[in-house]
Amino acid sequence: MIKKIILRDDEMPTQWYNVTPDIPGGLLPPLDPETKQPMGPEKLAAVFPMGLLEQEMSMERFIDIPEEVQNILKIWRPSPLVRAFNLEKALGTKAKIYFKNEGVSPVGSHKPNSAVPQAYYNMKEGVKRLTTETGAGQWGCALSFAAGKFGLDCKVYMVRVSYDQKPYRKSMMHTYGAEIVASPSMDTNTGRRILAENPDTPGSLGIAISEALEDASTRDDTKYALGSVLNHVILHQSIIGLEAKKQMEIAGDYPDVIIGCCGGGSNFAGLAVPYLPDYLEGKKIRFVGVEPTSCPSLTMGKLAYDFGDVAQTTPLLYMYTLGHDFIPPGIHAGGLRYHGMAPIVSALVRENIIEPVKLHQLECFKAGVLFAKTEGIIPAPETCHAIRGAIIEATRDLNDPKTILFNFSGHGLIDMGSYDKFYAGELHDYEYPAEAIAKSLANLPKI
Ligand SMILES: Cc1ncc(COP(=O)(O)O)c(C=O)c1O
Image (cartoon, rainbow, N blue to C red; front, top):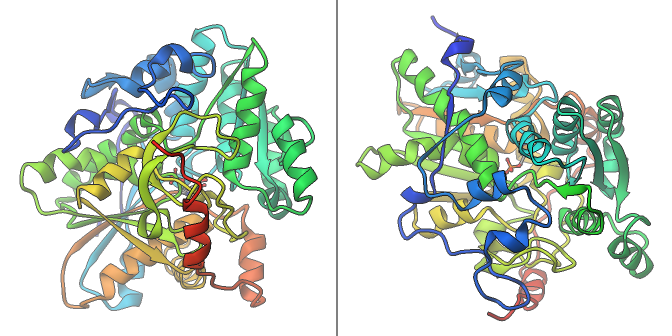
């Protein structure tokens, strides 16, 4: 019985895979929010370094991973591919369940896969300081770690509800040397305006992004980093799927279904997109993206141009969206509380290649507890959504010997407060009312 497949350091991929040229029907370009015309890199260069903008727009299928980046990724990569034998047994299924364990990174999730190259390209272009937002705290920790590695200062705007729920994420960011503030904050015009209108707001990723962008665009030494959604983030995350492909080959299996949880779409796409060329050549694979019922951008949102933030400062992205001023309830999967979805994931849903599914948080926590008891690792609340998705697939027909591969996007050791609330019966399922979604969709920009 082979439980896990571990690649050697020198088997780590040395190139990322860029899915953009392979997307049927392609991607629509980002639009300038003022002119509503396609936006070139010049304007975006105020907040992103050219190295990342080139990747954002690139039509090259493979892009080299710089050696300095590879050396840091090797602290934890290649990550293990694990067969969940014990979970399979507990479910009584003939399905084979594999997971790619991204929880082994220094901060406990897939997020440093992109934080490290983002900090690197900024450092290369002379940037001294980075700002960012964080929902669950995983991305903030990842960027704090990566910025420190390349000698950059880092300020993190942390969504208020997570700031209160996850005190140890703050401690981690401090340990890596970053400055952290709860968002909305008194440090930006956007934050002050929102606090004046709604002092008790739980905050949202859309608000925190506005604050981090305002900070970056008002200082010459500072640029902004985004932890999901954008094409270059998915490019960096493709290392997950590239490794998984090699590991599944060693295991002598091929996935019938690939599953991931979807916040902005980066961990799911990172695992899934390296399999797209096989799919396009006729291989039968299903791609299942799991989102929370409380923030259902793929299943109840609209495919349209929208802002990535509340203050309407980002370029307009063509994506599934619930509307930029949608404020999701304070569920515990903080990393899944985003109003929009990556344009790459959105395009693959549009093409009926990715199947979106929405699940309630309680069934996901239950699945996470079963996973912890069987496989030993306590999953992050976000990851519980992927696990529940995998369990649904594995138990639909217990005699179907299908192969399931899911992304274990992060561990939950710093999310135990959420588990305590779950055990105490203080967590509830929440279905966003269709009228509230329609109301925020009514504010989509007119293109
Ligand atoms: C552990 C974990 N999984 C998943 C996500 C969702 O993000 P994405 O959809 O970009 O992978 C997050 C975001 O914070 C996260 O922390």
